[in-house]
Image 1 (cartoon, rainbow, N blue to C red):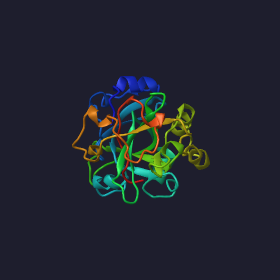
Image 2 (image 1 turned 180 degrees about the vertical axis):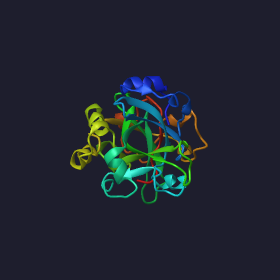
Image 3 (image 1 turned 90 degrees about the horizontal axis):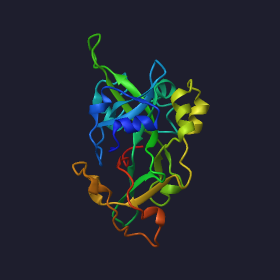
Image 4 (image 1 turned 90 degrees about the vertical axis):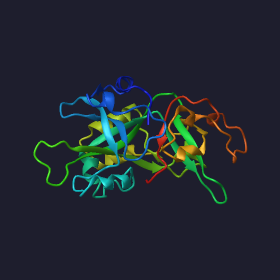
Length: 251
């Protein structure tokens, strides 16, 4: 998912590192669904905390954690209405942090081509996310919970033109504060779930082996030729700045 050390991420987002985060996530260039990612939330004490989360939201009413594999992402257009997300949307929001992400360019008569996206300024990405706590049915008092998360997606912005029609919601610093600390006003929160302005992200084509999560090494980010590229695009031919994960799944 991410190669930036937790202490550096925490510094970027004004957070403290939880005891679990320090050892929970190893550097990864191709994070698998339902694996562990890192997120920033505001604790009951009002402190921003960087901690580990199971990627794939498991609602409190779920019978088992396997439902999380179908809830990797939450569509911004329906997040306030869907039973699986609406409570977390009001009360349990976080920033899912990453160095980058993959999306797949598809089209009639062509082999899908993955692209890697990261911030143009080289800073870590902060995706709008939700989290939940789940206890197994019949769990004893004091039993540990599964803390899971989902990433909010919206329609693609200018930086994904011609590659994909969806993208994760990338929050800038001012929007990050509002997302984390809002009292739950629906209009305010929904106003934050917009595509990034053009020029926020850079992208380049990478090898199709990112489609297999068993492949996980820095070479995943090596620039390859885009067979559909008609002209040279400087924004899509720069050297890699950081590391990423696959967001080409549901949502």
